[in-house]
Amino acid sequence: MAINSGQATLPHGDDGADPGLLADLLAQLGYAEYVGHFNPLAPDPAAWRACRLAAPAALREVIALFLLNEPVAIDALPPALQALLPDLAALALIVGEPDARVSTGGLVLLPILGHWLFCHPPQANPGFYFNEDSMALLTRMAPRRGTCLDLCAGPGLHALHSARYADRVTAVEIDPACAQLARINARLNRVAGRMEVLEGDLYQPVAGRRFDTLTANPPLLPYPAGLRPPAIGHGGPDGMEIVWAILHGLPQALSERGLCQLVGMSLSDGRKPLATDQVAALAKTSGLDIRLTGLSHISLAPGSAYLGALLYTVCLVSGQPFAQVEEAMMALLGDAGASHVCPIFLSARHGAGQFELLELPSDYQHARWHAGARQ
Image 1 (cartoon, one colour):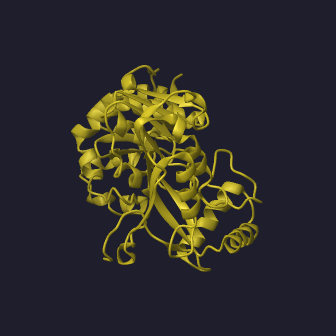
Image 2 (spheres, rainbow, N blue to C red):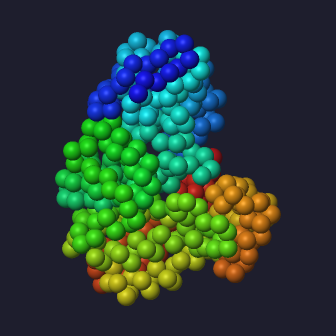
Image 3 (cartoon, rainbow, N blue to C red):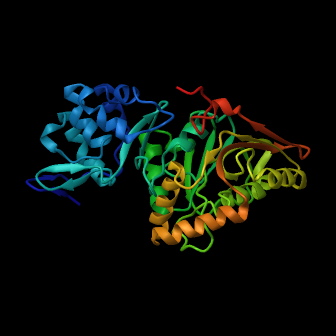
């Protein structure tokens, strides 16, 4: 279908065309180089906007379109990019806007450690998720040959990274729209031949199969049980609900020498993750060797910035009033004996049921997901 853009109409595109041509062109134009100047561990749309005038003049409209989420005039884009617009529109990566303009319909396109990712920018309740925890898992992954399973795949970042090394990658995502974007991202990075994307709930689409590596960045939002549940998922009252489901299925899903790596968020008393004893018990009963690393402890004291952001996000997800969400969240924390949340990294493999808890020194817990001295 043609995309009407006010005074201009994009010709019919081909949804079977190679979206990798866009990645080639943006690399040639210097877009990847420019975006690479920002801290990849803490993606920050405010910084992207604040630095827009520092970009080369010839790149500013391209940056406005793919990084800043702004409609731009078609004729302000480089001719080579204009030529790709019909095919991008056929893939729903470009949409028409009034006054002969186009936009990405809310998506951003990020070059991340050599991968290209269409996703939503970091924001409350995104559909196509990418944020600091995405990078926390990516920078710790140990991809290798063999088969890889990526659960809660989202737009596909971790599956893309594994596809650089593995013989075959299977990404599982419960949201059909997100799964479709992961397929497009696989084509964008030209790894679709060894990366399949399946729709379903965790292990359900791959029952009976075993994998040499397993990665997951599951929903980790602590979420009071009494609130209206979101459409896709959340971390449950302890933030670990989906992590528990993944861990319980690991003995059947991992190959003999398989390795699981995942990130999560546990409630905390400010000293250690409250999930510690339950993870240790699970290791013993399952025969898995598990290492749990507490990366930082973030205060949820009344008036704290993180609690405010958490309550705001739960309000958006649940659609319920702030006062009701705040009351439910404070009751949840009180019942659990929690005063903090703790970002965690967990690795597991077949073994003797051993458990190890690591904690980063408190003086270096300022960046939430990575150790670093206070600036």
